[in-house]
Length: 562
Image (cartoon, rainbow, N blue to C red; front, side, top):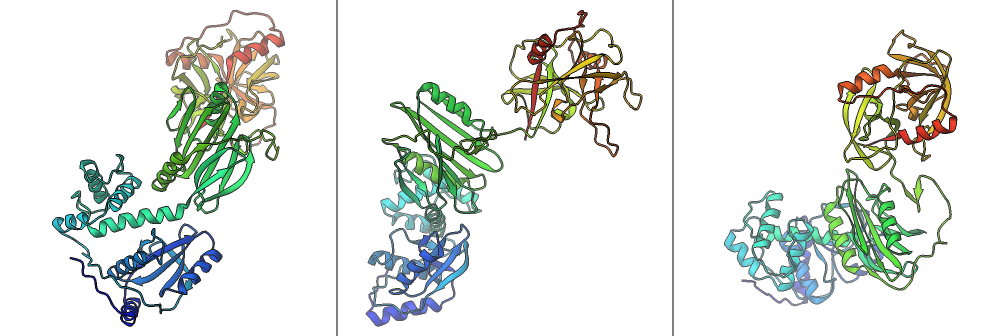
């Protein structure tokens, strides 16, 4: 049973002074500010009426004003007193100082008379009966706060109803287990305090602030403790990170219809801020995009309403998922489209092929060429094109898997993961062409910057490589690294070989020397992987414009993603 003792002014000061000198590692965190100057002003304000005011830089980059240090019991007493008297904010909370870094302010003891409340503390371990008794003393608001904190921890997903039913008990047990405690399903006083303290610290650091952005026509709560407005790049308003957390927020605002919404849905998925792994949903009047990789968590929502598309993106560090859930929930609940839309003419006007509205477009780690070898969409390319790739695509969208590979030869056969119908596929040359005859190499010379392959003309120089390897042809043609894997055509349009990757070595060859794997070797490799290659019966010279059309229909861009 709590004992309430009222002291006169002198005794209150003595009690608090004793607390100040006691050994302890608990503080009452009163508030936090984004800058040291602002925090120092607030610390001086509190120090004019309260003892033991200290200021510390937090690990988040913010600056906290706290009272202490005290023992845990003393900190609970001080928190109860000052909350009850209205001398500190209602959202002040207990802190263990784990995220306190450099001290920037230290006050002095001494304060006007106050009323002291002594609250009994059950320290350390409690019996389950004692924990239940402590739990029964909680108000409805305090019980709801426990559920909210459990939701933030990611162990509770049901409604916030302040009812500690089976779902809440399971969440408490999960929290205890994750924290290394016995999973009883009933939190002790200390466990509950630690849970609320961590949640309250996260809320304070986020500083979710109602934000009215009239230029975009959006009203929303933003984590202003972590981001600040940067610039307009239609259709986005960019909010950049103010800390080392690298949090980003985009507000989406543009005129449009369902076609515009669908286009935005597709375009957003090409950006680096929307990782490949995640759920996607395009509905009649809105869409949601989520993504995650080892660096970031991303969530994008946009809706069509009355001829305008409004929404937001939240980009968060992957190792901070709990705070991301907290910020995202607040943004989702507060998001409100209002009158106004971001004009297309706003922004810097600077253009960059690698950027979309100031955001980096996702690019593959490596780009090479390849060509269709059967009517089901099978593709031949170099082994180097697919080496150590987490994901392989034709272009940026069509997923492929490795059906066969020979690293000694330097060749790989790829199968589409979903059926495709190529416009053309290769036919192999029946015989090798004459030496010094003309050849053409098709390939994506610029790594996909151009949407169609380039055709480069050259000469067939030798039936073998420089080392005498008869499986390899020597060509005289200028090529780029991303041309490797592309088909080598002889004058009739038949495929006489596949361009190989340039080999690294101490010897530097002339820039117009290239090598290709012979058509007969390619046919043997494909036959071993269940693909029978047709032989060309064409004779004579194919017109350059017809060869260009054939190469365009047959040649593909191979993208390697990690």
